[in-house]
Length: 260
Image 1 (cartoon, rainbow, N blue to C red):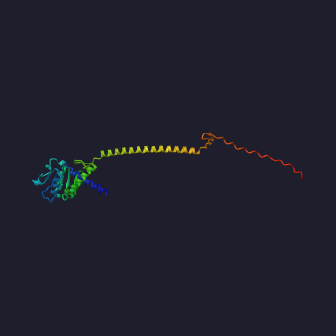
Image 2: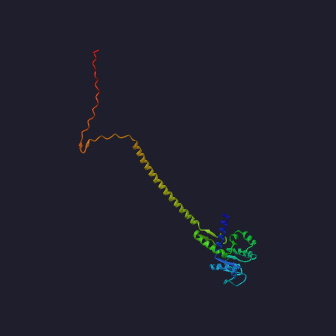
């Protein structure tokens, strides 16, 4: 799954980079509406791309004057080339385009064979800039949509240059800012937690002191009862007389009985 995802991302990167070129050339451009050379050129024209048709036959294709060779291009290093020729001609076109240091290469289905693919894959830089899967006019609409969505959500920036990988996330500054914001939030949260913990500790300490005082009061000796107040409603009453102490009983001495 990871390999498939990576391959798809790489393919999308290549496609977006290709379509980001300042200029385009279609080798094998045609006036025949059934051919890829017509459809690819038309799509580029419809999307206001700066594109020229290249065909060995002089004249105009879709109203634009043709070049007969890539060597006639005024700015090949900033021109992406669409190749729509038979496989036997593709390798020569590709070698010429590479020698000119062209921006990127998109071989349309049917224009490549095993020799062409081997040639591309033998050169890492060329392979990184080459496409040979689906026709441009079919996948380009989806690619432009994905690029627009990615540019909005992820701030994609497409670098233009022969050795550039294509899409670079302008994320370092954004990520740094996000990290800094995260640190601030974390510090603020930590401070709030510490403050709350201190408040709770103080309340617990106060409660403990109150409990300790209550326990101490409950376990202390009872105080003597206060003296009885003999004044009621401003009238002093006589204190009650103390109860008389009991007297010891007197013994009775009996006289002897002399009647016996």
